[in-house]
Amino acid sequence: MARIEMVMPKMGESVMEGTIITWLKKVGDKIEQDESVLEVATDKVDTEVPATHSGILVEILAQEGEVVQIGNPIAVIETEATATAKVAENGQAQSQEKPQEAHQETHQERQEVAPLAAQAQELIESPLVAKTETGRFYSPLVLNIARQEGISMAELEQIAGTGAEGRVTKHDIFAYLKNRKAAPTTNGKAAEPLKTETAQIAKAETIAAVVEERVAPAPSKSDAPLEAVKPAKSYGGNVEIIQMDRMRKMIAQRMVDSKRISPHVTSFVEADVTNIVNWRNKWKRVAQEREGVALTFTPIFIEAVAKAIQDFPKINCSLDGDTIILKKDINVGMAVALPNDNLIVPVIKNANHYNLIGLAKKVNDLAERARINKLSPDDLSEGTYTVSNIGSFGNMLGTPIIMQPQVAILSLGAIIKKPAVVETEHGDMIGIRHMMYLSHSYDHRIVDGALGGRFVRRVADYLEKFDVSRSL
Image (tube, rainbow, N blue to C red; front, side, top):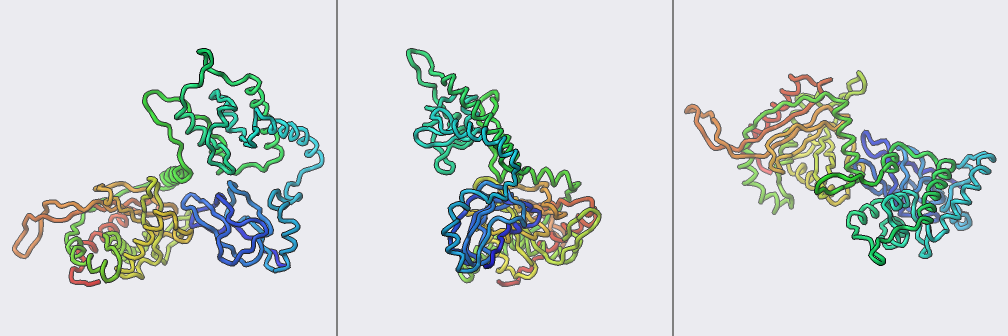
């Protein structure tokens, strides 16, 4: 009877862990190979993870909300049909708790924790503390916030919960506090939480903390910021308090890490892209009608970048200590702004192997799936160079931050009509031209000004010398 461990898959370069959002299958379910089994979140993407084998899901090793390192086991699949009977007998127990061996507690530890656990259970069943007559459970964190904010259990019962089984999360209670109206009054005096209730809440928190410390596994570093969240402190003036979502926290950490790791230098070049503008205006309708693709400027820019990387391959590398890793594949990442104002970078792998229509289709597909949260981990992995088209937001130039472990990133500014000197066979003249700035940030540990500056100049040359006689 073959039992195969399903592990947390690799989610892209530099991603070391994933958070389990939800299990799409339960213990005892029959699953097919490549069928989605669970949904996982990383700092880059939320994605469904497929089964590695067909069979029966006999054990879940990592629960929802748990942070798991890449390569660690998350479930067990039994690949023979005879497993069905065993699952029917043991599935319920396995889905509710892990095997006894996983806890590895000593007899003495069990004796020490048992009385505390009993007290915690007694308090949980109390209608004034963690579980009311409606059967609703409140975590110690929520109870702590309620106690500090003077929210009675009766008032807490009225808060709509968005957590599992309708539980109130810290976000729910913060949202409630933001819009909280004046407390109801009795005989002109504001109602206050019962002292006994507050005492019970404090006691529940103390006991729960002891039980969690002795019984539960230690939280990972990734969990620490969430567990350490405190009720928002008050700020002066007319302000709104907004908690960062998971992706924004991860982006913030990645940006700080990049500036700390890489000494950034940025070179700027202005390019005349009049030929590209005129050519695109001529062919964009044909591309839409014949190929069914919207022809934007982005694939044209990526084509020029891929050509320049072939001319300057040392820009297409990463650094590991004092070892330079030169990448043979040209995998160009493109920054995509999401509807929630966060940022994600899908990757066009082997960008130099596509023609312009192929690049246009790839760009549109990745951008669309990014905005509807349908990217896979593979779409975000193995990038070797990144492009950010800030011109789509009307920005002229910027100083982009490098995507680690890459060593350079190119920012493309808005295309603007300007008076410029035009060289002709009859001499120089002033003309109205379509101009744009290219901003190239690079890691000065490995890319010096000569290489960084020559590379961005070469990209601009490819744009300025665009062949207007080419067809789709």
